[in-house]
Image: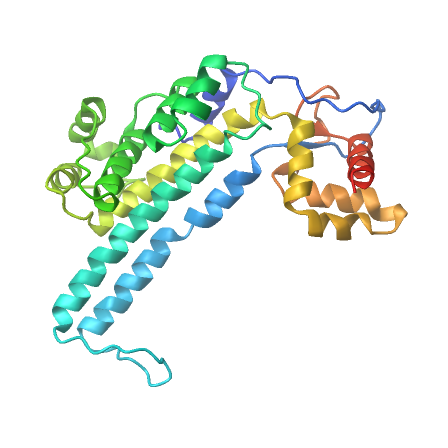
Length: 319
């Protein structure tokens, strides 16, 4: 079973217990209904929005470029730009390389943004060595940040991780002038010896040896390579996020969400008193929480009506 499958994610989660920090001060009523529980970090949604349709957009651009090459698509007079390539084939070929490199760079930047989010004070990992690696030494290195997170989560060596590591080095070599990064042997060997029968469903069209050859020769990635790296990056973060969320200080996190979406929250708490808590609850349901009437009353990731009221009072007193 691949690590991004639900059973493997659960196994990884069980290796990490909830921190129990960030509790609210207000009392909880034993029969209180409609508890909501944080199920994924807010930045995971942003990550998915940034990356979710990247391959679709890439294909759309490539389809358009093919139309330009075959002259089925021409510049409309309403599009006011100067465009008159002297060599159409060369222009289309260069554009294809550019968009593939841009898509790879966007993917790794999305991963970097997610890893950067983990450095925020809303997380309390109870592991000084990991926090030091994540927030200090690794702060300017995507690879070192990812290595620290992988070690902390006890994520196993697999194909998605290996392809993400390849994507990081590939992107760095393409973007940074004079960069000549190599891929660690463990990831290179895993990609080289991957069983094609295990990749047919999730990584259709994967050409491991071609990917490694293109990378080592300094060539831009082909479309299939970019598509596999995009898919791998999404799978990896999807497996990591349920673990990271367990180390959220819920009180700090909830307050941070309010500050980040202050204008929306202002409108929510302006609702009539009879529906205000309901509206606040809906606000948090749109930010990574899920309804869970069976959640334990002491869950460190649960918000109850009394907590929502406390957050309203906190916001009003601070403004």
